[in-house]
Amino acid sequence: MENWLANWSKKNSAKVKILKPSFYKRDTLVVAKELLGKILLICSKNGKITAGRIVEVEAYSEVDPASHSAKGETPRSSVMFGEPGVAYVYFIYGMYEMLNFVTEKKGIAGAVLIRALEPVYGEDLMKKRRKITNLKDLTSGPGKLARALGITMAHNKKSLQGPELYVIDDGSSPEVITASKRVGISRATDLEWRFFLPDNPFVSRAKENRGSQNVRN
DNA sequence: TGAATGATCACG
DNA sequence: GTGATCATTCAT
Image (cartoon, rainbow, N blue to C red; front, side, top):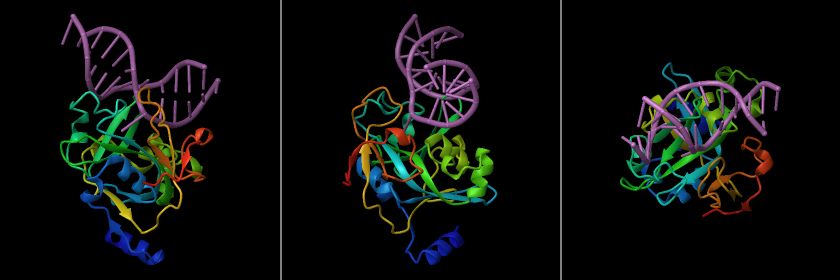
């Protein structure tokens, strides 16, 4: 990991840093927007690294009928009420893991769903895990990216400061971001709490990507 | 458009 | 225990 960070820093002549819990201990909508452009890196048990730049997210906040925290603290949602800066992973549709980052101070529920990545490292391993070869289909959706990166329920509640999961700021900041309605939910369907980089080819659901532009904070 | 496929939660 | 629901994906 240290090597990877040093190499990435040198290659891009950029100052890289791992996002601290204080980054996540803020308003969920702010964190969601600021996560765009950051790098998610996973180090597997056998030391294999895969990484991608975050290009699409959704916010799920304390006051949010669509959030798993809406019914209060349950065994599944309790992590959303806990310490910020850890992963919330859940299993859905009998097939897919979804990766979220926990936000807000302890006691306040909040999470950001990571919906799409632009691959930046370990594409061959991602292709092997996804059993496909098309780069564009590798991580352009929440279920896809979890599988490509080897995310499982074992990652639930794990720190985002390592040694398995890392979120990295390499100084690059998107110029324009778009907000739209969230995908696949049945409540609070009018809220534009999905944020993505317009025109990025790795954003999911390309046909429905109309929204409000330049909504940065 | 709908099948796949199983965890979660409310209800009793 | 039971049944409805589900922050999705892929093949028809």
